Length: 266
DNA sequence: ACCCAGGGTAACT
DNA sequence: AGTTACCATGGG
Image 1 (spheres, rainbow, N blue to C red):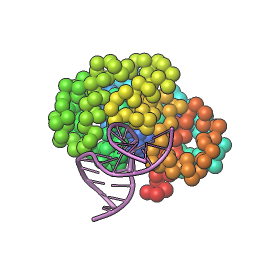
Image 2 (image 1 turned 90 degrees about the horizontal axis):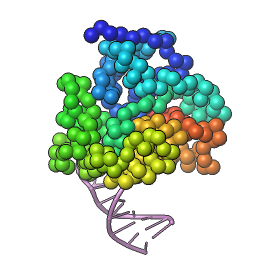
Image 3 (image 1 turned 30 degrees about the horizontal axis):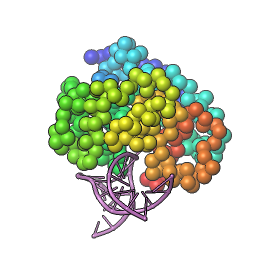
Image 4 (image 1 turned 90 degrees about the vertical axis):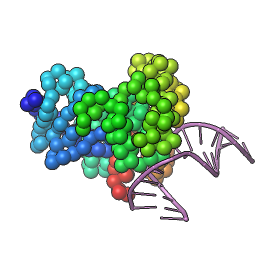
């Protein structure tokens, strides 16, 4: 497998920030290269000055999976240079290159169910055990287990994950997605309000997890997840609401602000 | 021992 | 309609 694809790097692109700013939980960095799995494919990827290198990657996988995954057709420079707000400008100047990844909707839903009242290191651990235990594929690069697979399991089966009270939520989500009572195709095609209601039919899915799923899984960039950090941001910096320049891409602004504020407190 | 973490639910006023 | 205890688990 020496298939390798090199492309010029977009203007606003930081691989490490994209993969480790709290939107995806399965990417690991080893010696300048990031390793991960998405849409059933393992990838090693590296950013060098002015270019991106995708290792072990066919032309077909690049076009169908990784190009959309990294949102390479979107002009983020245009978006972030339109910010006319002091805090957003500060966030962008420190952490330029964050993008909203187009993740698999089921993986996003399941991941953010696990995220509730939890911290990022432990979220990563639970997801790793979930994939290692129930995912298909090679050891060390297992796929994220499908909703169908998890729908056939019981809460007790998930005990090795040590996901606590969230196990029953994972099972309920898997069952509803599998049987179609939560309809991903309709969420995709309908306005965001439909997705908000549809996703909250799942036990353990409230407003915040729904927004995360819509943003990271369905790429609805107007979705605006409010967690404890964004709550602080809104109280401290935007008591009157987000500035106009974020209209339609509130979720992208949210990701910059979330990471910026979180890094400040470390 | 206490508090917090990319929250949500159910049982209260 | 708006608060509040509780939910498992692990790290600080």
